[in-house]
Image (tube, rainbow, N blue to C red; front, side):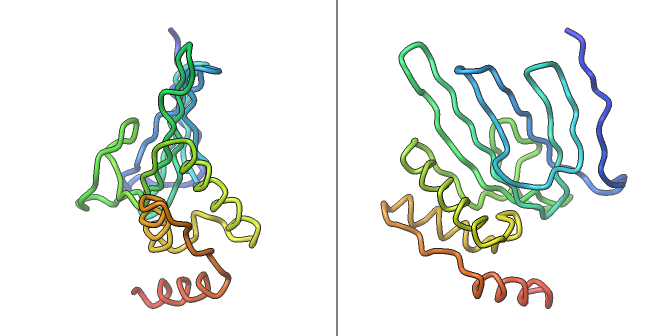
Amino acid sequence: MTADTRPRSRASHAAAPLTHVQLTWIEKRIEHWIRFGRDIEETILDRRRRVLSFAPNSLFAFVRWAAKDYGTVVSRIDILRAVAAGEAYQTVPYVQPGGEILLRISGWPKVERTLQTIDAIEALDIDPSEAAPDYWRHVHNRLSAGDAPRPYTRERHRAWLARRSVGL
């Protein structure tokens, strides 16, 4: 197996530790992909696997799906914040070293609802990776309890941007 391990870099990050996510695509068997997020580096391992890297504090959604001969066995979405050096983190399969878990949902109906929530944020012309981290925790809690999450609004987004600009 030959691998193209030359990174494709979009910025200089010599000092920043990155969060690496291994993606796999074996059609109709294993599909790991990033639904949103701004990767800053990509390393192609082979024709079915690659690694995307994220800068500290960036948000991304990592979707995992797997099937066997008789149907789906895994359907999961994790929305994570890439951590900085020295920060505490939770481990997540295929994510090194790990990240702060904002949302962790399993089962196709809830994963589908999460994807619809992401679509609704994009319909507002807001990048989901720029949405308030608290909102993703809210979505996790509501879906885990079997309730519908409140919609993300432009007003909520403006409030988040204002809080972020003053360091809250």
